[in-house]
Amino acid sequence: MASSVWSGYLTFGLISMPVRLFSGARGNHISFHMLHRDDNTRIKQQLWCPHDERVVERSEIVKGYEYRKGEYVIIEPDEIKKIEPKTAKAMEILEFVKAGEVDPIYFESSYFMVPEEAGRRPYALLAKALEESEYVAIAKLTMHNREYTVFLRPYKGGMMLHTMYYKDEVRDLDNFGRPDVELKDAEVKVAHQLIEALAGEFDPEKYHDTFEENLKTLIKARLEGEEVTTIEKPRKPAPVVDLMAALKESLAQMPKKPPQRVEAAQRESEIKVVAKGGTSKKLRRKPAA
Image (tube, rainbow, N blue to C red; front, side, top):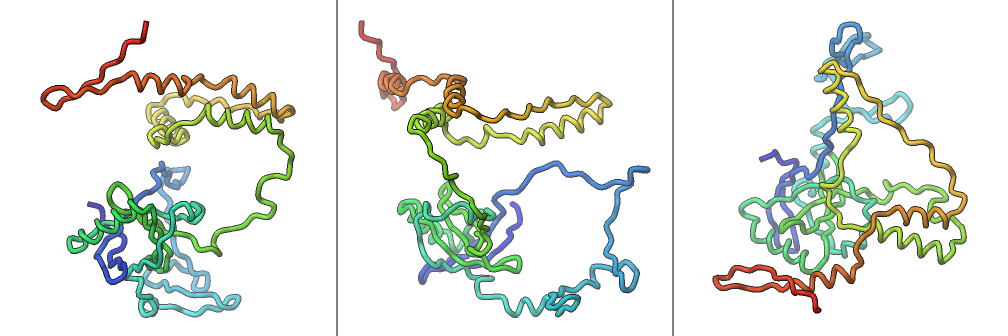
């Protein structure tokens, strides 16, 4: 099993449970090394002190906060340990809120929260209560030299933890929002039809990093001494002059879906029959003559 990134106690009223956090998601990208073009030797990065004019070892490095231009106060690791809040080892639930009230812009990183043996029962209880109540928990947690507000939600019978940005870390952009333009009802109606034509169920398996796949193809071609194929780039789209005409043309190009009433009729025509021995099969009702 992967190593945990945090271990401690989750407290809920007078109930506490030992838990561990494991990374829930990470980037998976092709990485390149920096090489010297002349001899393909990998370049090393060194720590250079311009005052002493020499390379320094990592053991010589300390952390400093610049309180005035060019002047620093040195902070030692044991001093940071002394000021760690209680949330470094105890994660206390502060309140419960409806999941829909938390804007996804606040989400940062995701973690699996797993109970230790002694915490399995209260963990299962809290996960089930959250799932049935449709609430999520807001708590505080300290790790990696930072105290986070975190979001706990039920997931596949267990619980996921998401670290969150603070309000002052979420940026505002001047003049951001819906443009001040007049929209026609007919345009909005066709836009809804276009959305419905593209509507489907979310399945992460459907989506792939095309650029990552192209990089793998490029690397394979270079290893085998083959020519690299250039990907045809799309032409710059022309400005939309007639919005309604563009909406209708887009809708006309969408693949046709069977009407919902036909799908419903097909479902109704399937009769589930429980046979002897507990097995089941589906029979299709013959259409009326």
